Amino acid sequence: MNLSMKKNEDGTVLTVIVDGSIDTVTAPELENRLEGAYAGVKELILDFAGVDYVSSAGLRVIMGADQRMSGTGRLILKNVNEDVREVFEMTGFDELLNIE
Amino acid sequence: MISVKHLCKSYNGAPVLRNVSAEIGRGEIISIIGPSGTGKSTFLRCLNLLEHPDAGEILVGHTNLLDPGTDVPELRMKMGMVFQQFNLFPHMTVLENIMLAPCTLRRIPRTKAREKALELLKTVGLLDKAEALPEELSGGQQQRVAIARTLAMEPEIVLFDEPTSALDPTMVNEVLTVIRNLSKTGITMIIVTHEMRFARDVSTRVLYMDEGIVYEEGTPQEIFGSPKRPRTRAFIRRMDMLCFELDKFDFDLYHFRSEVDDFAVRQMMEQKKRNAIQLVLEELIENILFPRMEKTQLEIGISAESGEAEIRALWTGPAENPLNADDEAGQMARMILSKRCSQREFAQEDSRNILTLKLFGETK
Image 1: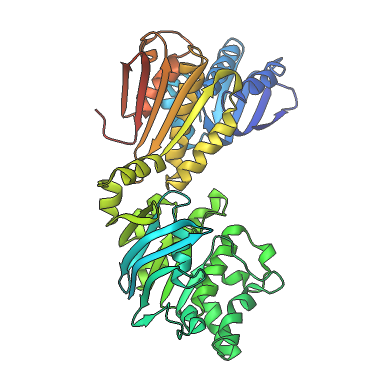
Image 2: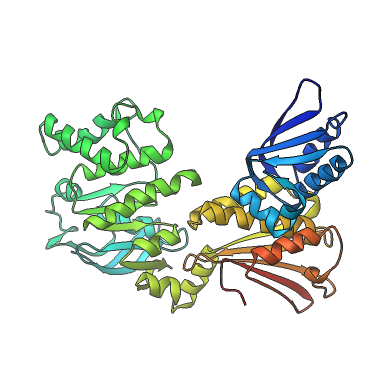
């Protein structure tokens, strides 16, 4: 998994572009990278165009990020491919998350 | 077209072919399958006299190959062979490699040989590589050139000796596709292969070799669907299965995943299904099995016949179906397994727990 982050000028919108698999091995890394980036962020965008695989370990991190954002702003998932969307659907996460 | 009777061949007194007989008709596509070391390649090499049999008879048409007066070079021109290693001349371009034998052995004019070579390169999908050197090509592309080179001699019979064994699994399909297309042209083909799904799909007949003989032969449906003899049955089952001894403290998910994916590619499983089986396996191992036990035996079967997959986890311990547990950590995993698997069954036999998951089959 590779990821890059960019913030807008006033630091309120953070876009995280993720590539590869979010699984048991890589999910902790995603969690750690997000942990250091929440400060001042009102909108967290996870761009999943390059994500081809998400397991429940990844879902837990995304859910945690959504809960973290819920008090002060919101989390948006973008460009989720069909296979990954199916994993969200089968666990009911598609109902809980903002997926664009 | 080819009639083999009582063929025997030994190396240093150790018999490899004990008594092989087979009849192969014009236009047939014969796959030869079986465990390693049972004489499949030796048999193939005897057919064009790369190995000389100790006894027996090989008739190609009306020509007895083992007759001392047989014109062996002429015979080899009729019977092309594709090897495991591609053996292209490294200093020659792809085009020159293909033109070499027709120009030197058949004395075909260069312009005509070139025309034919380009046509064959188009057939194997490599027209744009005509001027490339072999080292600039991937393994799969080199093998496709080797096939084109064999066809340039316009053989009546093509022998394939494990044509995909030396290839990275990602390149297997491109070569199999070329052979598959070739099988529709009416040329007689004899293929030694470990690609079971391929053998089932393209062959008119399958020879199962074991113990130095043709142990069983039949249509692909007979050999893969309902093999009659015990060693054939055991082999077919084993070829469709991958087994692991998993240790929680010595488990590399990515290494495991790559082995499963290689196996699934060889069973010709499409990408979407491969992703699905990987997801089920990760959830099962990381969130259902490892939280409960340190060691598990895992069997993954992908049927070459139906494309269905079966995962069996076996472990010792008190009878407890982990799919009925209510721990929060495993909740999402259980949800994914319930959606992805068509069947989930738990049983205990002789103090061993067996959890069986089936994918891509009918829901029970």
